[in-house]
Structure formats: C-alpha cells, structure tokens
Image (tube, rainbow, N blue to C red):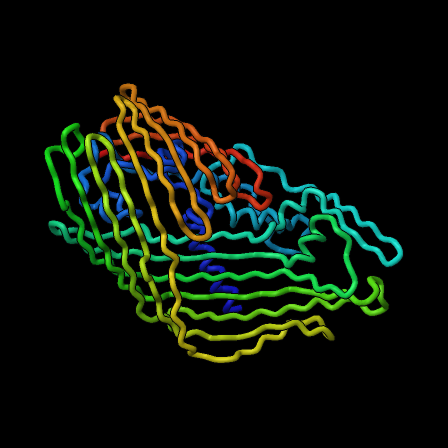
Length: 440
C-alpha cells in the first residue's frame, strides 16, 4: 500500500505538470505548434537560462490555459471500482497519457473489443483486432522532466529561486515470441512469452543559484545592425522528496502440448526500490544556456540537468507470484540502501525571426526517450493575433494547430485548436485550449 501510494503521488505530479504527454499550458504556444516562444523575459528561461538576460521583445507576454477539460470529467467521472460493470481500464490509462486539462473536441474511439480465437488440435491463435494497436511494437517509452515553475528574484545579473523537479519515465516491451503472437502468429509449444516493464519516478524541491548576462552587445540586438550574445548558468541544490523504481516481468511458458491437463503457470517477478521524504538526501545539478540575437534573428541553445544527481536511502524489495495459491508475496531485501539517481539531460535548440508583421519560430527538444520538433507563426492585425503551427510528436506523427488571440491593454484572451496522438492507441484526436494572456 505504501508503494502504491507513493507511485500514485508521483504520477499525479507528472499529470499536473502537463508535460508528460507534451501538453501545453499556453494557448498561444498550443496554437503555434507548441514551439518554444521567442522574445525573452519571464518564462523563457525554463528551457534556456540565458533568456533571463534577454530583454523581452515588444508585445511579448505570458499566459495560461484554463482547465476546461476538467468540466466533463467532473460531470461524468470514470468508474474506479474494478468490480463494477462500468469500470474501463482503457479509459483510466488514457487519462494518464492525456491529462484532461484541455477540452477534447474529437476523442479517438476505444479500440474495438472484437477478438477472434482459433482453436484446433494442438493449435491456438488469437486475433486481437484493433486492440493490437494498444500493445507496443519494440519499446513503448514515455517520460518527462519538469523543473517549473521557479519563484525567485534577481539582483543585477545574479538570481536565486526555488523550484520543484519531477522526473518520470516508463519503458514497456514484449519479448519476440509474444510480439509475434500479438501480430497474429500461433502460440508455439515449449516457448516463453513475456512482457517487461521498467518504471522510475522521482520528485525533489530545490534552490537555484545562477548568473545570466550579455557577453557582447552592439546597438539594439532586435534591430537590423544590432547584435547581442548572452549566456547563463544555473546551479541547483536539491532535496529529495520521493523516489521509486520498478522492474516487472510477467511471463508464462507453454508445455510440450498447448492443451495439457495442468494449466499454464503465469509467473510474475517485480524488483522495487522506493522511499519517501525520510529517505531523501541532497542532490545537485547544472543548467547552461546561450542566446544570440542579430538583425532580428534569434537563436538559442539550452542544456538542462547537466550531471543532475540525487542521493537517497531506499527500501529494496522483491515480489513474486506463488504458483500454488496465485497470491503475490513481497519480501524486503534491504532497508536504508544507498542509491544515487540521475535525471536525463534535456537539450532545446530554438530559432525565431520577425518578417514584417510575422513572427516565425521553430525548435527541436531532445528530452526523455524522444526528440520533439515544433514550428509556428503569428501575425498581429491590430488587436487580433492569428496563429498556426505544426509539430512532430513523440509517436513520430505530424500534428497541426491554429488559433487566435485578442488583446485589451496588458490583458488578453487566447484560444487554440490542435490535433494530438496522446492516447493508448496512438490515434489522432482534436482538443481545444483557451486561456488568459498577460502582456509586458
């Protein structure tokens, strides 16, 4: 129960961060394909610390989408009791892949449950139909590293801030024989079929100490004839709050005949390491960044979590299935075991240019288990902004987006519509995001 509670808290933090599924909390970014917005100023330094030294571009701002997606969830919550007829594990799993912050306009239908089983003399084959798309081909990987929001203040080029750090990743795979069965091949005798899963999650709170400034500057860097080169570094001192990892294997081996008198034993083995705040120790990390402005062109490179490490004292245990009773037995192997975990490096490269009234921006983000590419454009027509964009998501699918905004002095309203594939079957859906904008 303690482990389940810990993992539940970690998953809730991941969902709340909105990044595990590449979901955006900015309707403006969402309309522009999820691109890292150019312009500098508050908020831009999350992916590139050097942006702390770059003055905000005229008309730039920040914003947050409103959680309209929670309204239908609250009105019709999913059934959580597996003993009830309305319980749907597919629906619950999709909530993890696609946290319900934005409003889903077109939700992909659940895979058809039509399954065909062919049984003959010492022969067994299963056709899963559309359910086959739920299972990964090769490895199915998801993950996130989120280190915002940061709250702090700066004095000249130096700054101090406090911020959380949440990291989660999961790698699910099938061995070759099981993958072939999923693809429609018949079961074979004396063959092991196995599903393997590795999951890791950790959360920490930290203090950031940093510096960001101009290395070289000529004229107005945002105008033609001007230029500016900026750099920044951010040291993070962390205190671990929760850690858990798990290696799970579920398998069974067929006998010399598929329909033997004795049933096939399904074996489960899980190796766990976990702790709460009592096991957290001190961690450390480093973020680096650089931005170059020249003649209206903006280029940036940010490298976050360089050699980020956290020290823990964890409980190590193993769980196995009892073939005789069908129960699961858990045994603690060690307590207060020393462990040092790492946080994956995230690299963000972005570019932007103003072409008359148009702002054109693009980026590539190398994060946990995936490289995401985004691009978008924006044009202001008086008080109204029109936006469009596209991106290549973690499923290697091309997605499109568009939207508009209206400004009233320092405040505004934004709306965006975007396609996505954040669901178990990796089918395309459509969502609506709307929120408030705050201009500098």
